[in-house]
Figure 1 (cartoon, rainbow, N blue to C red):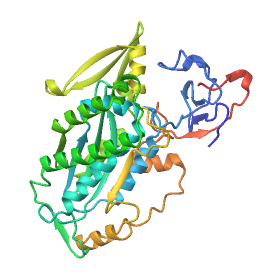
Figure 2 (cartoon, one colour):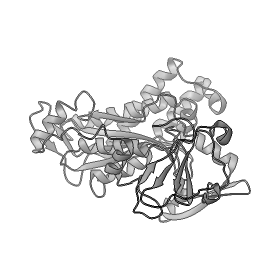
Figure 3 (cartoon, rainbow, N blue to C red):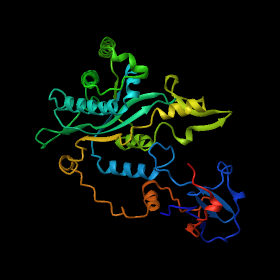
Length: 384
């Protein structure tokens, strides 16, 4: 990969190369002059600017290849069994505290949801087996409000304690939801109390009143009386469908580019789905400042891991217990990928079917690299 200058200038092979000017730049980038670090793609008499990826995990545009590789890795670990889709949600009362203590409360959400699932599943009264599951943190709703919740894709069965038998869950009943919700609530609030006693919570701003022990106790009492939400259903279309659904968010945060409509007179307009009104597609307008404020609510703490694997899918069990489960279910172990050393654009083509080297105008010619523009005087500095 060329990392400096306007780095990628392919033309369409097999067609006559003619003079190209910036007048050929199509909207929506015609208003922006090329900067240092951008890539220009030349095709016959047209110019298309392809801005270098920022590779930030919060970017709504970047990391398509990372997403595709993640989905492929998940498919390598799928078992031929039913999967369930569970969602653990923090109640509204905890959201101000979660905003000021993201690493602590996000960590508790993962820890307590995982312990809850594993504890109930191991109980012989319910399943008596060790599950495998992947958990993905989401923190947003359709209108970009702060709404922390955890999506879990869970095997509909597991290994018995001796690892000699696969125990299947019942087809139309996985685990008791009320039991899951109440155990999750108990575990979470117990650990929350411990963090409070150890002085590991930031109690300031909108949560400053919780410094008073009586106010802290009242909050805990309210949370114990609240019914916490755990949602479960078999995934539509099988586990691959659920991973594809989650994959839209694993390498992106808050909102996708295709939902953005326009910026008019300082107002950002975007589409959202109103689940309370029959899942109807609607339009919402927010001031630019409010839109940015809502987006920034979902910036993750530095280094925080928002996708985690447990049970049979934990790293230490993938080559032992997961292989044992495959053998019991009669499915072969997937072969190592022989194409991991391919160039990134060829891997993207294989995984997604998106061919970045195909001419976007004639849809027949192949793009080839022809020139590297590096003169800072002609391209200016890189975009921020």
